[in-house]
Length: 409
Ligand SMILES: Cc1ncc(COP(=O)(O)O)c(C=O)c1O
Image (cartoon, helix red, strand yellow):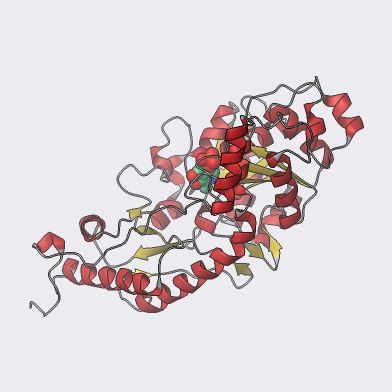
């Protein structure tokens, strides 16, 4: 039965999409001005300014630490670097086992491999957070002492249950907050539950500078070591706020420097973005709720809801396609792309978020049945903050039209 539905691009029709849902956020003008000033002065290296007060990077670190409510933040050249530094601070040795998510981006197992350690992959639940019961089992079975947990796409597991496992097994807990800006559990910022939190400022993230990362901690010694691992030498650490000078003098030549520093231009681009986070979060939440209300009732769509304790950033939306074959799910993705709303399925087409693609690690990959079930038909849609209410309505319309086409309506 052919209805009056409009013809899709795949049927020789035309698209109704005149925007790019994946376009990244521009840098606020104040950040551009600050970066240009630094470049014009030739002061791009973070330790060039004469004092910490004059350093854009030191000021950014100080402001980010204040915003999150922790004692220390250290700028790095990526979140991967921040996590690598964290594993070094945790004294991870080659061959050590590290508990981590089976569902995350490949940067995370890559960092574990970079430290020559061995990931122990923990199952995800239907809402894509880490399964605390499997974490408990794997912690007991592996004897691992470190947990590097991702809040992949901002999804938060039951943090009370996770923290119980962390305490029970005395784990060093490192939080990968690359996707968890402005995200809270019971009012507490993610990144402050473990010993160390790591944020990304790569362009698709909540704070965006092309590349970059931020390492946060309340532990003075970890902060001191992070500064040194990132590449502070001699007494350059004087150009940081909030460090313990006695400790720095003692540690100065004991810790190698891995050249993972943030640079002034990166910090300049990020400086006005801290205050922008709650502003763009409001847009994200509004758009996410609207899209949810428009597509949630569709019989082929399942949108698992976060636990009530979670306050999410909502800069992306994920949903499971239900009742479709593998072929039809792949046709859905192809048609969405042709309509101008590109999205991906985590568990298909050699996606870097599918653990079965991480050929460089040895892992019990066949046993992770829950994660396979939870990524196989999981669609991932970017909802950048330039999207208007009208744009969201168009996205919902396109999703519904394409599903009707797939269903032969
Ligand atoms: C979940 C997750 N963790 C960590 C990273 C690493 O971030 P970066 O590119 O800043 O190293 C990414 C990158 O996209 C990511 O998606």
